[in-house]
Image 1 (tube, rainbow, N blue to C red):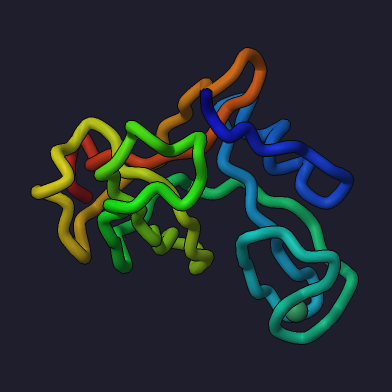
Image 2: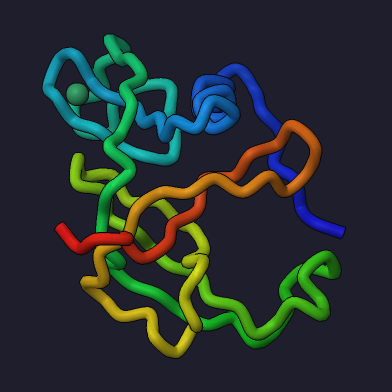
Length: 135
Ligand code: ZN
């Protein structure tokens, strides 16, 4: 059993982008701010003149923690697991798992790139992994 996120009017472009292998984040046309998770207005200037842009998918581990206690029944048997806060090059920070890397080797500042995990048929979750070639 896996917790599967549901798309709604606000987040649909994020999930549709993920299905296409694209990491989408919101961008404010009024002030240039980019952010995540999605909100109806700009977090910086409250403008509603916002759009979606594709992120490079490149970033670094801003922070991380290891979860030992399953806070939801769906996560029982999956602990311990690592949750990271990834800072994208464009500025937004995204909570994700780090794949293709032992938990013990994840470090703050580690260069990572987006990867896409199909967690349920048709539901693609953006995740991150160490960059193949550090940039
Ligand atoms: Zn703004």
